[in-house]
Length: 114
Image 1 (cartoon, rainbow, N blue to C red):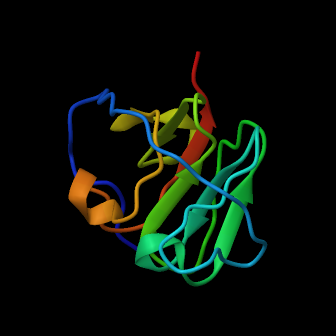
Image 2 (cartoon, rainbow, N blue to C red):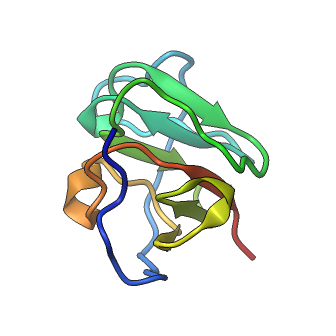
Image 3 (cartoon, helix red, strand yellow):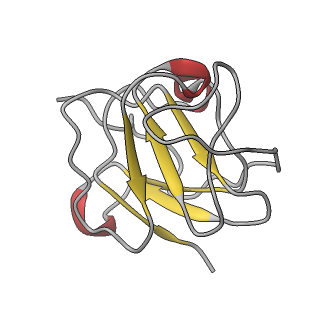
């Protein structure tokens, strides 16, 4: 199982916009409600999903993350390893293609950023 490649311990990205649908969003539209971080198996918010609504020190999916949805104005920290161990990055927008920010595998942990 691959995880985030070795990246800077903290990367802050710019803001984007979502909507919501369970089990995958409309193609090309991110899908997070307030308080949610959604990991999507496919790029552009397609495929299987894992919805995270609170700090999760051990995120488990049997697939690589292809895209990530979060609600506008929220920030989430994602880490390559369990228990919020580096490398980590803070997201403040939805990411339609996870590889574009260096995510080429699974995510080990996630929590709301302050």
